[in-house]
Length: 212
Ligand SMILES: Cc1cc2nc3c(=O)[nH]c(=O)nc-3n(C[C@H](O)[C@H](O)[C@H](O)COP(=O)(O)O)c2cc1C
Image (cartoon, rainbow, N blue to C red; front, side, top):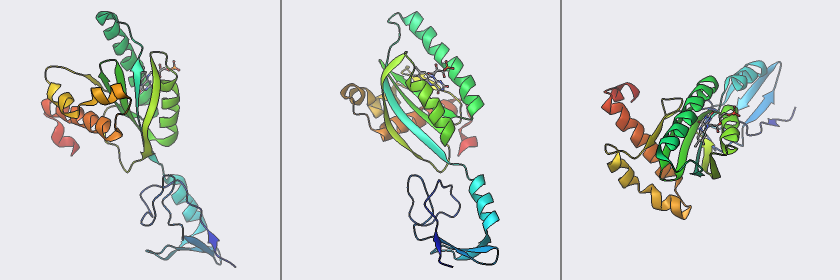
């Protein structure tokens, strides 16, 4: 029987070793060779034999983690008290929804801009982002990066940060505001500042060593 090509498909870290694409991790040359109830999974690196059913179980168990990094312009009140209440309300609802969907995230509010990293299982991230991008409290929502990730990097369902006297140095170093004003923030700059702010907050609480 001729060998059947396995199409690249959503992948987790297992069996990865060859060409890695956005949606898949099987090397394009991977083949199932049918036999007497068995299939030889011919990978360049690890030729071996697995039963079809085992292969299907392996596939079913794989979840794919992705993250979305986006930025937007906030439509919040100019009144500082009202604005602060609005931000608290966004966080209150986001926290609950993200916990339910096993989403982890970090939101930066810089001037009149929002930037957020949302990470989790692919369909949960997409559902969350669909809701977030339709929210009237911000506009011009633009995705910077959307890709598979090997592991989560954020520990909270929802955390947000704005410039304060204590984190001013991190904001200054990232220098995001001019990039946001030009409409060209780099995903690495947003991601890097989110991580730096998370690490800073955790080390202030003395719990950073738990998350190495
Ligand atoms: C800047 C910004 C960030 C948000 N982040 C999240 C989030 O991480 N998760 C979430 O569920 N909702 C988030 N929200 C709120 C959603 O847009 C939405 O209001 C909420 O999920 C409730 O959706 P629903 O009214 O359709 O149930 C965010 C809103 C804004 C403006």
